[in-house]
Length: 178
Image (tube, rainbow, N blue to C red; front, side):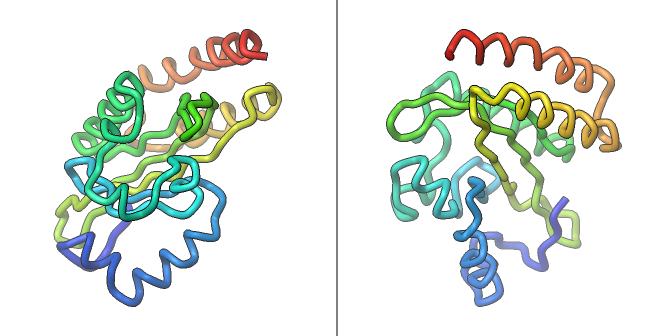
Protein backbone atom coordinates (compact mmCIF):
# COMPACT_ATOMS: atom_id res chain seq x y z
CA UNK A 1 0.00 0.00 0.00
CA UNK A 2 1.20 3.50 -0.78
CA UNK A 3 0.60 5.90 2.13
CA UNK A 4 -0.14 9.61 1.66
CA UNK A 5 -0.88 12.19 4.37
CA UNK A 6 -4.29 13.31 3.09
CA UNK A 7 -7.93 12.43 2.89
CA UNK A 8 -8.31 13.87 -0.64
CA UNK A 9 -6.08 12.24 -3.26
CA UNK A 10 -6.97 14.77 -5.97
CA UNK A 11 -6.00 17.70 -3.73
CA UNK A 12 -2.76 15.99 -2.74
CA UNK A 13 -1.80 15.55 -6.39
CA UNK A 14 -2.43 19.26 -6.99
CA UNK A 15 -0.15 20.55 -4.21
CA UNK A 16 3.51 21.43 -4.74
CA UNK A 17 4.93 18.12 -3.52
CA UNK A 18 2.47 16.26 -5.70
CA UNK A 19 3.33 18.46 -8.68
CA UNK A 20 7.03 17.64 -8.34
CA UNK A 21 6.20 13.94 -8.29
CA UNK A 22 3.97 14.29 -11.37
CA UNK A 23 6.73 16.15 -13.25
CA UNK A 24 9.09 13.25 -12.55
CA UNK A 25 6.48 10.64 -13.53
CA UNK A 26 5.96 12.38 -16.87
CA UNK A 27 9.54 11.44 -17.80
CA UNK A 28 8.96 7.72 -17.17
CA UNK A 29 8.19 5.60 -20.26
CA UNK A 30 5.97 3.18 -18.33
CA UNK A 31 2.27 4.07 -18.28
CA UNK A 32 1.46 5.46 -14.83
CA UNK A 33 -1.98 6.53 -13.66
CA UNK A 34 -3.89 7.40 -10.50
CA UNK A 35 -7.60 6.66 -10.02
CA UNK A 36 -10.10 7.38 -7.27
CA UNK A 37 -12.06 4.59 -5.59
CA UNK A 38 -14.77 4.82 -8.27
CA UNK A 39 -12.23 4.09 -11.02
CA UNK A 40 -12.12 7.64 -12.38
CA UNK A 41 -8.76 8.89 -13.62
CA UNK A 42 -7.17 11.63 -11.50
CA UNK A 43 -3.83 11.59 -13.33
CA UNK A 44 -2.13 9.93 -16.32
CA UNK A 45 1.55 10.41 -17.09
CA UNK A 46 2.68 11.56 -20.53
CA UNK A 47 3.43 8.02 -21.80
CA UNK A 48 -0.06 6.81 -20.85
CA UNK A 49 -1.69 9.86 -22.43
CA UNK A 50 0.25 9.28 -25.67
CA UNK A 51 -0.88 5.65 -25.69
CA UNK A 52 -4.49 6.73 -25.13
CA UNK A 53 -4.24 9.49 -27.75
CA UNK A 54 -5.77 11.90 -25.21
CA UNK A 55 -4.87 14.95 -23.15
CA UNK A 56 -4.91 15.09 -19.37
CA UNK A 57 -8.09 17.18 -19.52
CA UNK A 58 -9.80 14.60 -21.74
CA UNK A 59 -9.12 11.79 -19.26
CA UNK A 60 -9.82 13.48 -15.92
CA UNK A 61 -12.96 12.04 -14.37
CA UNK A 62 -13.24 9.38 -17.09
CA UNK A 63 -13.07 5.66 -16.38
CA UNK A 64 -11.86 2.65 -18.37
CA UNK A 65 -15.29 2.20 -19.99
CA UNK A 66 -14.89 5.67 -21.51
CA UNK A 67 -11.44 4.92 -22.95
CA UNK A 68 -11.15 1.20 -23.74
CA UNK A 69 -13.20 -1.50 -25.49
CA UNK A 70 -15.95 -2.87 -23.20
CA UNK A 71 -14.44 -6.34 -22.70
CA UNK A 72 -11.06 -4.88 -21.77
CA UNK A 73 -12.62 -2.29 -19.45
CA UNK A 74 -14.61 -5.04 -17.70
CA UNK A 75 -11.36 -6.89 -16.98
CA UNK A 76 -9.72 -3.76 -15.57
CA UNK A 77 -12.84 -3.04 -13.47
CA UNK A 78 -12.87 -6.59 -12.08
CA UNK A 79 -9.19 -6.37 -11.08
CA UNK A 80 -9.64 -2.98 -9.44
CA UNK A 81 -12.77 -4.04 -7.56
CA UNK A 82 -10.83 -6.99 -6.16
CA UNK A 83 -7.91 -4.69 -5.33
CA UNK A 84 -10.15 -2.39 -3.27
CA UNK A 85 -11.77 -5.37 -1.51
CA UNK A 86 -8.56 -7.24 -0.64
CA UNK A 87 -5.89 -4.50 -0.69
CA UNK A 88 -3.65 -7.12 -2.34
CA UNK A 89 -1.70 -5.73 -5.30
CA UNK A 90 -2.81 -6.71 -8.79
CA UNK A 91 0.20 -8.02 -10.69
CA UNK A 92 -0.36 -9.57 -14.09
CA UNK A 93 0.46 -9.81 -17.75
CA UNK A 94 -2.48 -8.65 -19.84
CA UNK A 95 -3.44 -7.36 -23.24
CA UNK A 96 -4.29 -3.72 -23.89
CA UNK A 97 -4.82 -1.42 -26.86
CA UNK A 98 -3.48 1.95 -27.98
CA UNK A 99 -5.25 4.87 -29.65
CA UNK A 100 -4.61 3.35 -33.11
CA UNK A 101 -6.38 0.14 -32.11
CA UNK A 102 -3.17 -1.92 -31.94
CA UNK A 103 -3.23 -4.70 -29.34
CA UNK A 104 -0.13 -5.46 -27.29
CA UNK A 105 0.90 -7.15 -24.04
CA UNK A 106 1.86 -5.33 -20.86
CA UNK A 107 2.83 -6.12 -17.30
CA UNK A 108 0.50 -4.33 -14.93
CA UNK A 109 0.92 -3.52 -11.25
CA UNK A 110 -1.91 -1.83 -9.35
CA UNK A 111 -1.65 -0.78 -5.70
CA UNK A 112 -4.14 0.83 -3.35
CA UNK A 113 -3.38 4.32 -2.04
CA UNK A 114 -4.42 5.01 1.52
CA UNK A 115 -3.77 7.43 4.35
CA UNK A 116 -2.47 6.74 7.88
CA UNK A 117 -6.05 6.55 9.23
CA UNK A 118 -6.65 3.52 7.03
CA UNK A 119 -8.89 5.26 4.49
CA UNK A 120 -8.50 3.93 0.94
CA UNK A 121 -8.30 6.90 -1.44
CA UNK A 122 -7.70 5.25 -4.78
CA UNK A 123 -5.09 3.33 -6.71
CA UNK A 124 -1.85 3.76 -8.61
CA UNK A 125 -1.23 1.74 -11.76
CA UNK A 126 2.16 1.12 -13.36
CA UNK A 127 2.03 -0.58 -16.74
CA UNK A 128 5.04 -1.63 -18.85
CA UNK A 129 4.72 -2.51 -22.51
CA UNK A 130 6.12 -5.85 -23.70
CA UNK A 131 7.12 -6.61 -27.24
CA UNK A 132 4.70 -9.28 -28.44
CA UNK A 133 7.41 -11.07 -30.41
CA UNK A 134 9.83 -11.11 -27.48
CA UNK A 135 9.00 -14.56 -26.09
CA UNK A 136 12.13 -14.61 -23.93
CA UNK A 137 11.22 -11.24 -22.45
CA UNK A 138 7.66 -12.38 -21.83
CA UNK A 139 8.89 -15.54 -20.10
CA UNK A 140 11.36 -13.57 -17.93
CA UNK A 141 8.72 -11.00 -17.01
CA UNK A 142 6.30 -13.79 -16.18
CA UNK A 143 8.91 -15.43 -13.91
CA UNK A 144 9.71 -12.09 -12.22
CA UNK A 145 6.04 -11.37 -11.53
CA UNK A 146 5.51 -14.91 -10.25
CA UNK A 147 8.39 -14.41 -7.82
CA UNK A 148 6.85 -11.15 -6.55
CA UNK A 149 3.49 -12.89 -6.15
CA UNK A 150 5.08 -15.69 -4.14
CA UNK A 151 6.52 -13.14 -1.68
CA UNK A 152 3.30 -11.09 -1.43
CA UNK A 153 1.47 -12.17 1.76
CA UNK A 154 -2.00 -11.60 0.28
CA UNK A 155 -1.49 -13.90 -2.70
CA UNK A 156 -3.53 -17.10 -2.54
CA UNK A 157 -2.40 -20.47 -3.94
CA UNK A 158 -5.23 -20.23 -6.49
CA UNK A 159 -3.93 -16.87 -7.73
CA UNK A 160 -0.42 -18.30 -8.05
CA UNK A 161 -1.68 -21.30 -10.00
CA UNK A 162 -3.80 -19.14 -12.32
CA UNK A 163 -0.82 -16.92 -13.06
CA UNK A 164 1.46 -19.92 -13.64
CA UNK A 165 -1.04 -21.32 -16.15
CA UNK A 166 -1.34 -18.02 -18.03
CA UNK A 167 2.13 -18.15 -19.65
CA UNK A 168 1.44 -20.96 -22.16
CA UNK A 169 -1.72 -19.14 -23.27
CA UNK A 170 0.17 -15.85 -23.69
CA UNK A 171 3.01 -17.47 -25.64
CA UNK A 172 0.55 -19.30 -27.88
CA UNK A 173 -1.28 -16.07 -28.61
CA UNK A 174 1.99 -14.25 -29.37
CA UNK A 175 2.99 -16.97 -31.84
CA UNK A 176 -0.37 -16.71 -33.64
CA UNK A 177 0.00 -12.93 -33.97
CA UNK A 178 3.53 -13.10 -35.42
